[in-house]
Length: 188
Image (tube, rainbow, N blue to C red):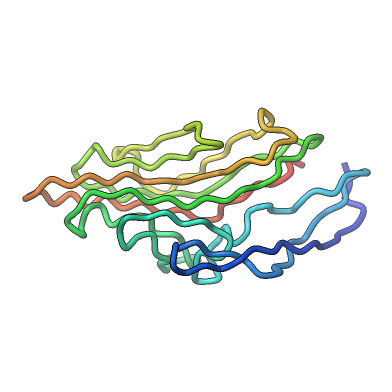
């Protein structure tokens, strides 16, 4: 399967700081023409967080997280401080994407968990509200997660990455959850 040409299209969304919902205003997203089909190179907007903010993402949080942090390769989304703010909370980031009806696509992301001692904390990925994977604090180090989106071919789906952090007074456990390089791409 060869790439015959490259085109671009523009995605528009609004910015609304009060609800912690961020959008992209006319971001150019490169597209490839493969055979007779036009498909996105990466349908996730700002999946590497190099903008330094959550442009393109819907953020839901009842804490001061998520934030953008620096890592050795640039920026990443830091989803929780592991209860260091002395309260239990949940946080999520989400985007809606159109999954190709004719070409197989894969969700891919890098994640890192710096685990403390609290094993009730977790990070998960859901598609349209259905959990496809959950990591608890015992899963450590830099990892890559991929998921075949064939079951969602032709659908518009919400992909959400969320964390749940507990808190026990007098306990220091500091579980930290990070994600980076999130993409939905054509399998070629």
